Image 1: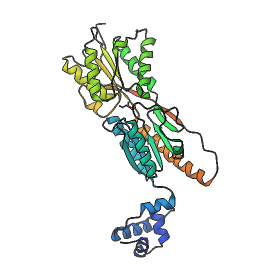
Image 2: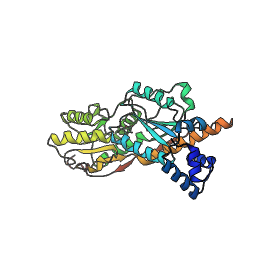
Image 3: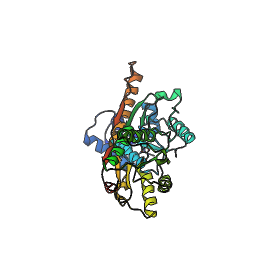
Image 4: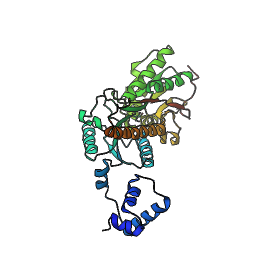
Length: 344
Ligand code: RIB
C-alpha cells in the first residue's frame, strides 16, 4: 500500500508539500497540486483521515440533526446545508430523529464520539428543553428553525408569528371571515407562534376566534387530511384555511377534493414552507415561503465561524464573542388556491 513518502517521490516534491496539499494548510501552486494529485491517483493513495484528525484536532465534518427527512422542508434544507458545507470542504453527517427525543439524544452522542467539528441542530417536534449536556457546550452548535431558549448558541430561524399573521391577513383581504387553522405539533415553537399570529390577525380585523376552527395536526400529510375532513363536518364550515405547513396542506387539498368541493371556488387554502410540491400540486398552493436557502447558508456560515472562534480560543485565552440570533422573514407566494369570497 502506497504511503505519503511514495507519493512525494513520484510527484517529485517533499513530503511536507504533499501534506500541505492534502490538509490545505498552506498555499501550493496549481502545478505542484496537480503533480501531487496525479501521483496519489497513480498510486491509488488515500490519506488516513483518522491520523490527520488526531494531528489537527479537526475532522472537517459537521453533524446535521433534523426531525423528519420524509418532510420535504427538511429534505430541502438538508440538501442546501450539505451543499454549503461541501463548499467549505466539510462532510455532513445527517441524523434523522423521526421526532423521537431518545433517538435525538443518541445521535448527539454518536456525533460527539465521531468528533464532528460542529452541529447544526433542528429539534424534534416536542422539543423546547435543551438536550445537550453541560459537557457538550464545547462543541460549536447552531440551532436552526426551532428555538431552544435554554440553549446558549447561535441561532437562525424565521419570524413565525408574523408568518402566521401575514397568511391570515391575506385571507381576510380576500373577504374571508370563517378562517380555520390546521396547526402543527403544539410544542414545536414554529407552529405555536404561527397560530398566535393567525389569532392576532383575526383579532385585529375584529373577527371572533372560533376554537372549533382550530385543529391540531403533526406536520405530516395524513394529519392535514384528517383535520380537513373534521373541519368539513362543521355545520358552518370555513371558507378558508391557514395550514401551518405545506405537507399538511397537501393532505387538506385531498380531503377537500374527495368531499366534492373545489379549491378555491368553495375553500381557499394557504400553506407554509414553499416546498417544491406546493407549486406542482393542482391547484398550485398559495403559501408562506420560508427562505430555506438563506437559512441553510446562514446556519453553515455561523457554524464555520464558531468552529474557527473555538479553535482560536484554544490557542489564545480571549473572551468568546457573543452568540448571534438571526431572524429571517417568510414571504407570501400567491398561486391558485385562494379566491375572493363573493357571497359573504
Ligand atoms: O414542515 C415542517 C415544519 O417544521 C416547517 O414549517 C419548519 O418550520 C419546521 O419547524
